[in-house]
Amino acid sequence: MVVRRLHGRASAACATTVALLVCAASATGCSNSGAAAEDARSASGSLALLRQASAALVRAGSSRARTSMEMATGGTRVTIRGEGVYDFRGRLGRLTVTLPQDPTGAQEHRPITELLAAGALFMKNRGAGVPPDKWVRVDTATLSDGNLVTGGATDPYTAAELLRGVREATYVGRTEIDGTAVRHYRGITDIGRAARRAAEGDKGALRAAARGFATAEVPFDAYLDAEGRIRKLRQRFGFVNGDRKTTVAVTSTTVLYGFGAPAEVVLPAAGDIFAGKIAER
Image 1 (spheres, rainbow, N blue to C red):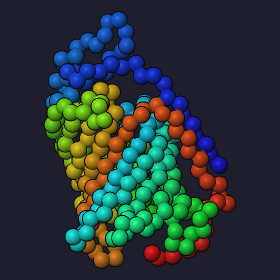
Image 2: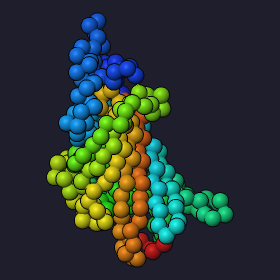
Image 3: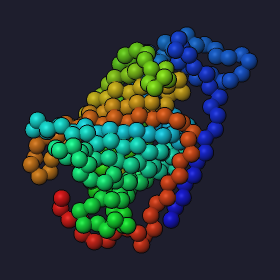
Image 4: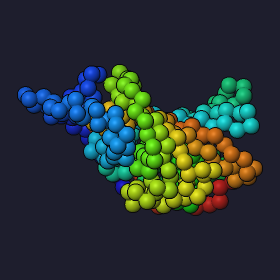
């Protein structure tokens, strides 16, 4: 059993809606704010900020997270939602994922508990022949989408690591996310390029995704706060349905908030992991 616990710390930074800049909480306040703000809007400055977004999350330590994944194919559209916490330093997360209701409006499936770790996804209440007290473990490098889609929620840290492969980005402007002033960027990232630049634990999954998606290019909208942390990230994937060979349009949205919130994730012991065959749905 592995336990990761992280407690938050006060952030020594100040920000205003006029200039979203990181500054020391000192009597002198912020300096060179105009130059920094201009750099954040420039093409080179935008690329640099986005490619370092995952590093900014590691510095933050932890956060709460909300996720949604909308899938559209053949005129059908479904949305899967998740909520939980993430320890960016320990590279561990926990999400409760709620599946769509059936056509009558009833809840067809129990929420699935997902534990996210470097290179692995653990799921409880997976159904399909898995005992309710057992976990299913999946090696994300073996998935054709690298678990960007399979789990019904994109791992928040992996989503941020995808931005290491940004090819082009445009500064859109200032806005707010849940009352926090942010800068909005829009662009395209490349999964293969991100895999080469990602942290070691994410390389395998991203390499698999680069092979499995209809295209390696991923359009995105990213909203960064004054400290370069992701507050909201929307990414659009083209995933190939393995059975029907059709392309499924997937929009994955990650919202991060409550930075520094306690995040405790306990990975299941070997005896709690289901070793049998998972039935087809």
